[in-house]
Image 1 (tube, rainbow, N blue to C red):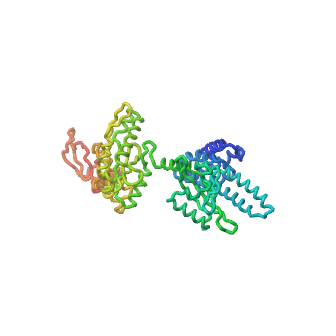
Image 2 (image 1 turned 30 degrees about the vertical axis):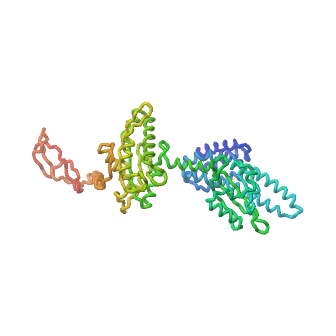
Image 3 (image 1 turned 180 degrees about the horizontal axis):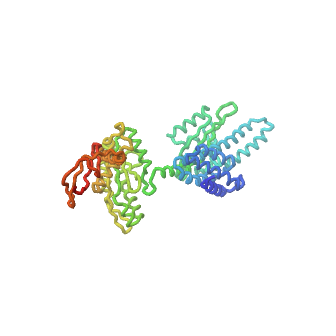
Length: 505
């Protein structure tokens, strides 16, 4: 077993032991949780299947770890470790574990209720004793269950709720009993209404929903709801049982992990992953896009002289200004500002010519505004820091891909090339993509890349060799096919020698 699994299992065991009564001896509990921790880490890392997490959730219920705090402590310990392994798979693994735990707990409660219902119709002589025992067991399970339980008649009246449900929503039992289930269902929750009506009509046996509901204190809680229909001996609908688990912490963890996976921790801006997802979606949707690729000039000098704390503050300030003043949003129309790496930012302009949003310009206008934003001084403690940026602008309509439809890679390659032009032309400026200049640069690079191979293959031919007089090194004559020349390649791919001084004679 890996060290990570050992450490995670030990932390998990310590957290669960703090709940109170343990159904397993300490050593056996530690061994089991280390083994399960290893399976969860493998699943989050891609070496196993998320279904392994569901088995762990069921095992917790089967081993009688049903205290209300058990799942909360389990999520708190496992969540960060699984997120560090892989955010997306970590969320899936943790969700599978929590879902299986809630389902197993609900199935256990439903099984007890079914036994109570069966016992109620036993022979009269044994029915009283069986009913007393079953009702006692159900009463204890109903009252102390870790999940909320409500029982309503098929006619639509809530007749019983347990303590956990009252605590979950913040209402006393007397305020709930006598109401109809529809009193708590939002009018626009069509799926929930359809499930309830189908059960009342006897057309649906069970349904599962995940919904937000208001708490009495004004907050919102997320719930995992399982509805089950209980029929009378003649088959007619008699009761509807709702088993409700509070999954607010799980939802909050999923939201937090997803935000971390798609945002830069220093600036809070969308990161490379979210930027490319938005760019791919725009291109797949056939929308014209513009890209403004920014690189802060000489931020290294700020880090080297004033310190990385000041450099980080400059990045955060610039990011905040770009987000608020250019109007970037994570969703919906507008510009998306992202931090790619280091001191590199990128603005995605969807609909580069006409985005259809008031006060939002095209890519050229956005680039000029971004340059003005960066040029404004940044005050960090006693320091007044002046920075500038080089910006490369490219639009999808001006870049041709392999099939005349540019990909995200085509656009970013063109944007990077254009950014380097802005730096080479003196920095603190905007450069626009030029297809001809780009093709010339690519041709020069390909030619220079072929020259070492051509030299090794003996493909160079000397056309002529000038003779130079010493000490002036001025040409005094020429000889064709002279040895000792220093050849260079011509633009056509043929090679020609460059002059090298020769002594007279």
